[in-house]
Length: 269
Length: 245
Image (cartoon, rainbow over all chains, first blue to last red; front, side, top):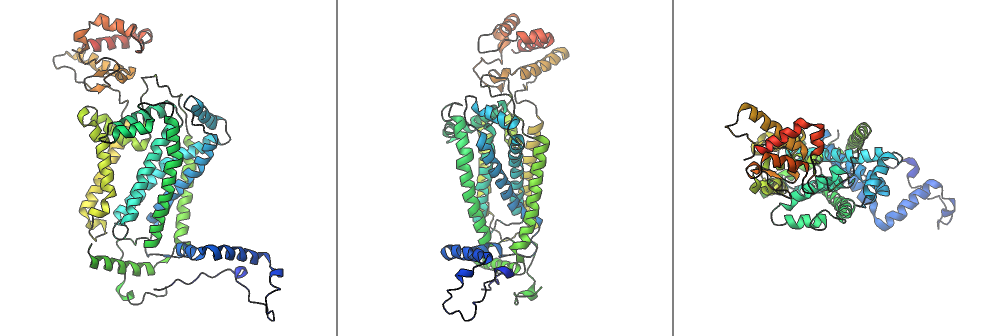
């Protein structure tokens, strides 16, 4: 198995050779300079976690020849998710899931009074649309490149679950401002669910927290929107990325390995 | 894929991978550029369109036309079209998307051919193009249809041209007034809490229709305001309802 060489460290971070004539090393600790302290801290953590090989495995793995801009759609989706997480945390600092008027009032406060409130809310709202566009484009890339085939089937399945969860985020988040549009779209949406076969009525009952839109519906949507689904998404993104790293990024399907290079994989460029 | 094909793929892939470059910094640089573009697009959209907040939710209104966010327009459109066949509505709005999701989920299990180039996978290509086209069409028409509360009835064929014109205008007024939130007319609207209006004219004379519109039984809203502001519209509404035999 060919191993990647360890990346060269910058000069300042290289371990210094022991000073000559110092047998027991007692003088070294006294003269630690700040740069070495950094190395020592990394060493201290690494000694306990062994994270350095993991980081090297994650960052210095090779991506196949021919990887192009279409391959950035996955990480772009991840970035859009991070945008949602950060702006969502700021919105949560002001939002009150109170169906009797507090929710609408707090969103009105965010939109009109809070510093940069409308901007952050706008970023959260439009970030959702951007994330959904990106997730579909990413799925299209994977489909057209045949990247879901062996050995990456499980990566695809996790991706489909992530797509469903993202759409569920869009649906649950739509209610939270509790204006007319939010309320009626949610009532209709949940009623559509209620029409579904077998589990439909139970699902709508669970979402509404009863037979109809009631006092607990909003807090239910809030909990789903900012605790349940984000937790699941984060966990599944972790699994997705682990598999991507472990199995490697697909090569573009039109590329073939050059036959004369097959017997000398360690070629120089 | 059988075992030989799997091994052939892994061999081929390991060579291609070996010919490639390290993830950091080459792929990371591209990802960072893309992330920057995504960030700028989001900021641009947020600054340009912001986030509006409509009027406060009011569960007692019946005239409000619900609209989802754009990425659910396709579902909304399916619902709108399928309302005319109530028996199939749940199947179309829940069943079809669920089946599509299951098909998507199980894709690697039924598409097991080793071929990865899209131009050599005609079925996959056709299916993908059809799915993209269908989603785009449904989203587009969902975005462009007016209220799902519009009435869509054919005027009886024995009507004169003038009667037909009144009938069409009346459909519009009924749609705008939100009658269908509580009443059913033909295959349109909700059956309840108000009575079905499909054959209302054969039960109630026009005079009484007009007086009910003005002095209804609660919770139905009164149409006195409509008569004062737009007497023409009110007359059309009465005339239309009186045609529903």
